[in-house]
Length: 422
Image (cartoon, rainbow, N blue to C red; front, side, top):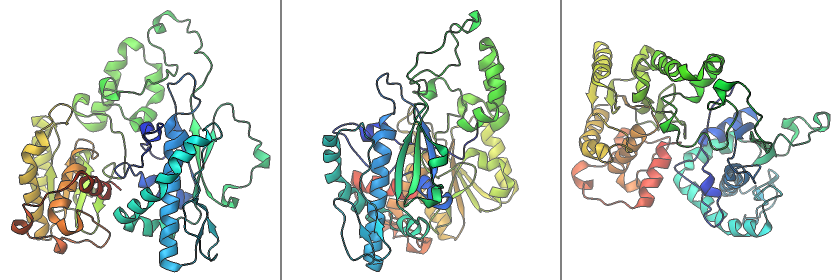
């Protein structure tokens, strides 16, 4: 009933002949957590009746581990010249810090021919990661002492605990991939009122959460799971509505499920380089401690009008500059952000040029605000194609008139998003 965070590794990135390494779903916080704690456990499940593990655990995460390891191995080799990498495509030099494992480690049930299809792609992804995320890799180079390696665990795994070494004794940083799925049939539910409302795990039940979650987040569920599981099915929607309203101070219909795919947003401000530009959710506006860190608020949430007035009042009463652009989710209005994009970018430029710290908020800190800041990065730093590192400041912004006519490719946009959503 306790976890430290959540992440998003897409199963389709591990589908046969559709392999990919996503720079916009980089899950940098997972790698940093592994570096700081010496390892991590990722829990997932699958709706498949023939697979024990979802493709995200079987292939996507192993690919992710391998690409990070190879990128770090290449960085170590370039900076010190004292790293031997063990990957098939890795560079080999004299041993200095020891062998840095950059092999692709897949579970035993993945056939060799799939591994052969994936391996030629790995070095290209590693080089791309090096070019797009140099500051992140430099940080990992200092903090990650051993390469990442996935290990698979399920309800049928046989583990002799007394035969296992302490995790710090491994020659690698373990990333345990735990499948919560069971191949057994669901137990019969005798109570009549639960015939149509079972709390037993159902394969694939988490799909399309925006249609059924009613604003319930993983954190909110685990904080109140005792109450929720004891509630009569006929009353559950009302209880969820009250919990979400009490937690966020608004109707659950205005608050979609927050599925964390990066470190942006969440419970604090995620700062972008040294720009003085931060990302957060609408909940930040109710936190005096967070508001004390900024001079300006750009509100791009889709909250109702009475909530908008409250947020504006709270920020203005603290002497902050407050600008509001109501932006709806792209699922409901695909041009809502586009309609305000130019004005919002100009506002950010003006505020940052005045050396003000700006907080950009949206409903969950995961959608509109990172998209807007990514567009701003492309606009303000065109010579770097929107790339922002730990040393980037507002003084590095390009001239508005000179750069306004530039065009960008999809690759440029992906890279900008990756830099913002570390």
